[in-house]
Amino acid sequence: MSQTWIVLSGKGGVGKSTITAALAVTLARRQLPTVAVDTDIGLRSLDMLLGLHNQIVYDVIDVAHKDCKLKYALVRYAQAPSLSLLPASQLGSSGDLTEEMMERIVRKLRKRFSYVLMDSPAGLEHGVVCPLQSADHALLVVTPDDVSIRDAERAIALLEANHKPRPMLVVNRVVPEMVASGEMYSPQTVANTLDVPLLGFVPEDRGVLRAQNRHQTVMDEACPAQQALLRISQRFLGEYVPMPPFQRKRRFFGLFG
Ligand SMILES: Nc1ncnc2c1ncn2[C@@H]1O[C@H](COP(=O)(O)OP(=O)(O)OP(=O)(O)O)[C@@H](O)[C@H]1O
Ligand SMILES: [Mg+2]
Image (cartoon, rainbow, N blue to C red; front, side):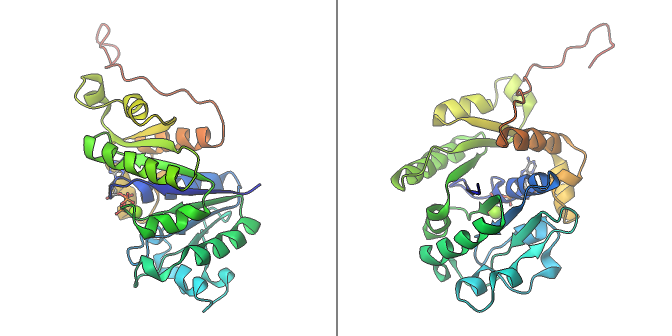
């Protein structure tokens, strides 16, 4: 049975697109038919994050307005062919896509893919409400700070108002040393504050930007964020993977550090 997820946050720039791309690639590497849908109309980014930006001919708005068939707008991710991208348009605005158009497109995608992952824009306006209507599940991305948490509370309220189930939480840009020293909220504290289940956390990691600058996902970069996103993907698929602890590493006779 096909699952449709919206990735949302409220606050912008917290890592929705990075996490959508990484999750989509990981599912596809397991041969799970997956489509990543960029619903950030006018400000698309998944195409670049997946290195597919030179292969786009048509986009979701062309499909929505029946200027092309869905199959011509889908771009195959060659490194893991189970993944396709339905790109957002480079121009235009969220108003170019209605809830009915989105529902029609998602209905078709569900027939071809097991996982439909919709990356949403920042904010909680029409650009988010539109894909949200077609989603069965939600993945909420926050950074461990008060502004992001407050915006996430509003995102949860928006989900509730639209009769959607409680989201799964990913806390991004966590600095483990700061959590260990009590200078940053722990991912579990963020989850408790928001009263949502914690799927995992991703550390602050320069490898994310390194991968992005090469137009690759972080899953192609050997770094702590890659390992964290692999664990998140495994939990997403229902596997039991414990959360790593936040103890500060202790030196023991100078052997371990
Ligand atoms: N764990 C991380 N460590 C370091 N940098 C990160 C991490 N996660 C994301 N970033 C960086 O944060 C920036 C924003 O990420 P991204 O575009 O995924 O956020 P977004 O929520 O999709 O933004 P928008 O709301 O604008 O769509 C990018 O430059 C990305 O490289
Ligand atoms: Mg984004």
